[in-house]
Length: 206
Image 1 (cartoon, helix red, strand yellow):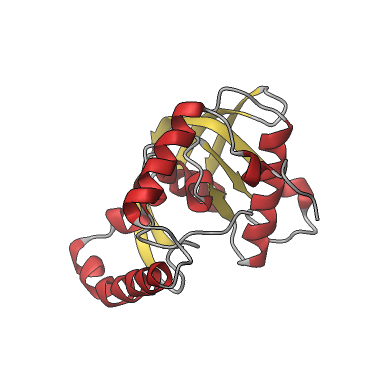
Image 2: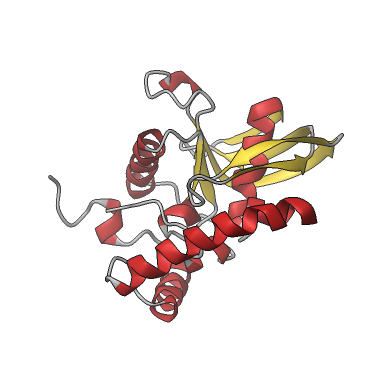
């Protein structure tokens, strides 16, 4: 069963590997990621954020499960063009309660694959463009706090420490394994190149 992991879970700093096959396991995980995203009132969720070291993420900038027509899946995305620069507020489901202004490109062009394995190319600006950049960063182990200007990073430190303390407490209580065990598991999944059976819904169906 998938869950959104919080900072500093090792998956959030993991350099994801490309998806090599679009199959029913991937589609099942994508559906569950959308459901998790909606439950958390988010607009985007990267595979790293559910402990999977693969290059894909989901988006729905309306955050509304009734607007399935706005659901987008980006597999092996690559931002091939950036224009302008603009600053706006961001948050992240892996940093609950933390928001800060981040400077990013005002307009981008992204190439990726969709769930049918087709190549897509999209020009995006405003919220969609920002969300794509945010989620694409996740796939390379970069977080929105890495983009904060020094003064904003200082002001965010208290909240970041609170989030980290919550993760370590959950770790001590057995909700998460040790960092070392998680890192080994991520390496194994990445090397195998497939979504584990227990996360793809192939072991049991409720």
